[in-house]
Image 1 (cartoon, rainbow, N blue to C red):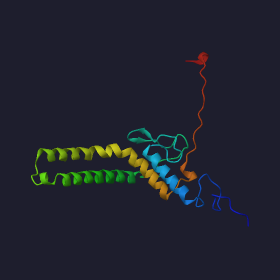
Image 2 (image 1 turned 90 degrees about the vertical axis):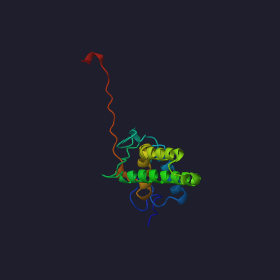
Image 3 (image 1 turned 135 degrees about the horizontal axis):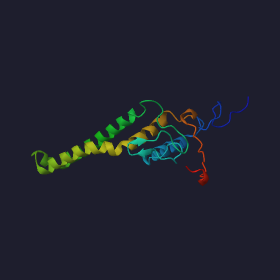
Image 4 (image 1 turned 90 degrees about the horizontal axis):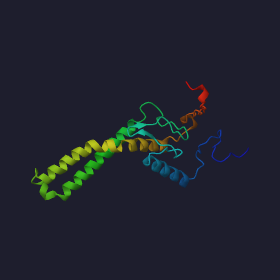
Length: 171
């Protein structure tokens, strides 16, 4: 019986290592993936930018061709992550404000407490918008923990056709 090549796990060789990678290497790859997500870069190659605009993701990475939305409804988890982060951060800030201003809280409608209340209401509307692209990128990184990219997740990059400008054929 011939020995198996490293990283193939007895199957056909492909670009992604399987179970033969050591534990530190997997942890390092996960940390790098989440770091790339926070920087809004491609989680696979790190070269391509994820965003067309603040609210629009690219379909695939221009560098490696990785398709970001693997299936319909893929980013539903990102919306939940966005909501959870917003609600937890607002709850933490309001609880901290409540404990720091406990004597004022007993005489409720004071100007300081009303100002904090209005700021928290505004933050509840603004925070999800600010965190939105990060939640999508972190959702893709979280998904990579359980479903690493496979060759089927990559699109073939179309080759650019170079067109020469010929002044004699200009319209």
